[in-house]
Length: 196
Image 1 (cartoon, rainbow, N blue to C red):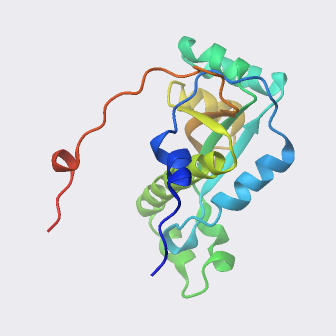
Image 2: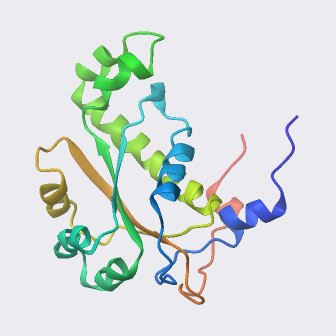
């Protein structure tokens, strides 16, 4: 039997982790972004489909392309964050399956069923977005995920060929002291779960 993770690790990943709106200004370097991906890529997805695609916006010029797509309340957050990630998914993820999944011809299954492919891309891309947040926290980064933006405008700006679809955006950096709202309550197990 594997040992549970140490309490300090659980604190960082879940119990003390917060959604940050303000960061301390320390930059996030290329090596950290690469490590982030090298961790998150190991999270499980259906038939190892790995549909998520990540666009890391760090330069002022890159962020200016995203600004018109944001709700007004999120503009300053993005402008001041060291990195903003567009978490998207590849609608044609199945083209990589001959390399990623060799147990059977899964590419043919998804290529023949656009509805299944769309559901699979969104669901598993969302999972990978969650893995990204956990990977970031494990590397000492803080996260500010958000959905307050126009997906259609974002896709037109960053993915004009229509293949990739944005899901959510997430600011990354080193959180500023008090850079978050008071923590909200959580629902209890009895309210949301059952054991059958």
